Length: 256
Image (cartoon, rainbow, N blue to C red; front, side):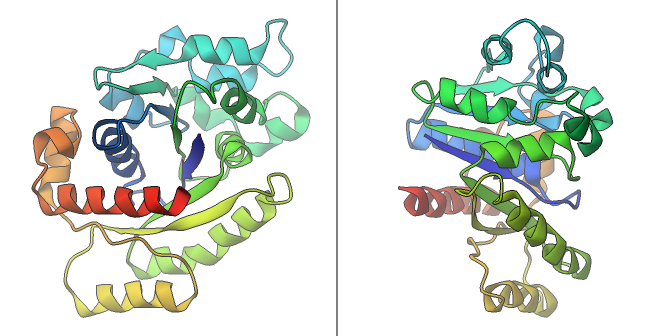
């Protein structure tokens, strides 16, 4: 089983789009069992798959640092099936926005809950994908403690490129707690043919970072969010649909 955190401290870079399409492709094209964990307080992944956070969610598990019930048992009870075959989800909740790192230090947030969960469900899933928030808080810390890999979706603009240094420092610091953590690669998203965009993509590669094949910009991605089905269903032959399948093939090849 492989656990992957989909992370960027900048919003609007297609983290959730990447998470839901990656899960669907792994489940359908690779016949894999996938668990999605929604660690973002915006809860877009939860909404996309129609999950109900009132039946249990990640925020409640993080807060359950000193309860009487085994938090891992609670975590497994919170997992829900989705309408997409072989994709399950641990929902998020908007109260995740209130869970900063100070709660981990105070012991009121259990940052080890996801690592404990991955150990328990290792025989049930082939992949766990964690849709992380655009912030370094208790949920993203829990994700990086649990993860084997990090995928960084990145929109190729100057702000995102400047933010990469800080993000890489955070990942490096987390290796002190989770030595197995590695960068699987950066994933350029919303790509289009433009000299500045191609130059920015080249800069990533020249910096020595692993870089996946880019995902082309497509209005079919917006259409996907309204229809609440992945590109495999709504527009498999669109540029983004083809590119996401190519990206997942690269990812699978890299982790096997």
